[in-house]
Image (cartoon, rainbow, N blue to C red; front, side, top):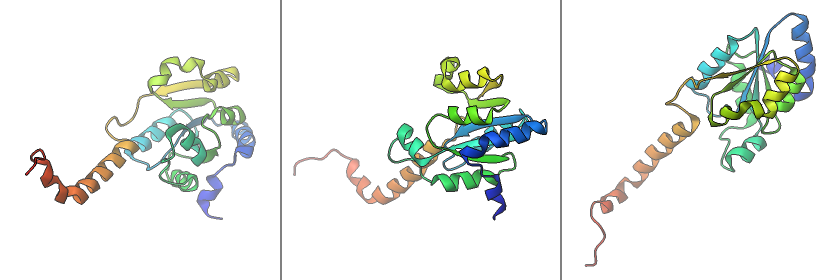
Length: 184
């Protein structure tokens, strides 16, 4: 078995993983996301999350969960590829694929000491979320951190790549934009 596969944990094994780590007095940190086209901001975020404990477990939204939230054109990469990529990062200890958009079921199984999430618009109301209520109920802590890159995102990477490609493809047609179309 490839070494990265040992770090991939099924949802059904999260409870056992949590128990084993707590027996060793390890502080467990959990975070989740899509992790499509991993970039520097995401890597910085995972490094920061790792600083809150001894073991970092990362949830990867399944293909189906992402489609439900972000639409039919996402994700770019399959859930297995995204999960494998995360196992190669030194800050990440374990990875699990999340079957639904909310990571609340995974939080209930793993019971991490710290749940880290990135500050977004919805976090003004985060204490009303199922995730927050689950973590606080068993005595865990929820930590909200700032984005680690405000200028790089998967969407921005795609826009740049597609925009650059389209301008190259369409350059021959751009000459017609110089003047409005007129009758001859």
